[in-house]
Image 1 (tube, helix red, strand yellow):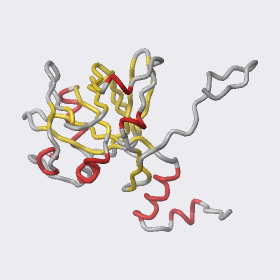
Image 2: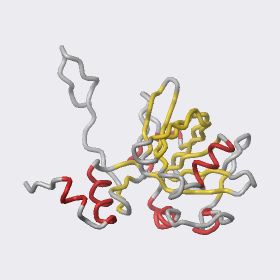
Image 3: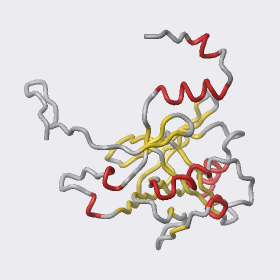
Image 4: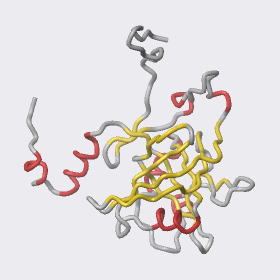
Amino acid sequence: MTHFPIDRIASWDRFQRAHFINSLSGFKPVSLIATVNPEGMSNLGVFSNIVHLGADPALVGFVNRPREAAPHTIRNIEAGRYYTINHIHPDFLDRAHQTSAKYPDGVSEFAAVGLGEEWKAGFPVPFVEGSPVQYGLELAEVMPIPLNGTYFVIGRILHVFMDERIVGADGLIDLYEAGSMVSLGLDAYGTVMPHARFTYAKPDRPAALV
């Protein structure tokens, strides 16, 4: 096994270093986050650092890069307080990835990459048309991370939309069937296949395959 000390990693060019460190944490869920600016224009960006924080209350967080590098999503969320998270399906993966381009103010990524806005009654931000799993959130907290200038954005889940047939009797969502994608590094994507599911683990009872 080869040793990669941090001083060696730090000597690489920034893209090689970013790919290496970003993929080190493993496969991650990847989604599109949609917002609307104060002028009413939609914005869309791809994020692979979305994490579950708790089920009661239902909270989800994501990391926003420093404002100078990625200002639109966090600015719109702070101003409007609502946003949507939309799973990416292979059918529109290329267009989803294209939203990572740095489009200027005044350009909606929905229109620029050819993804449809799906508006649902009573919610002020569009969902992504064709996304197999969609949920709408309200901003709960923005936590600055001074160590690297990023922000941890926490939202409360208000609405969830998906085909009811992929929701199991115990609540587990069959994301394999939905076709939800994962990412690796900065620009690699994949699908996943089920491998195993176990019973709830307890000290006095070994977990068994379901």
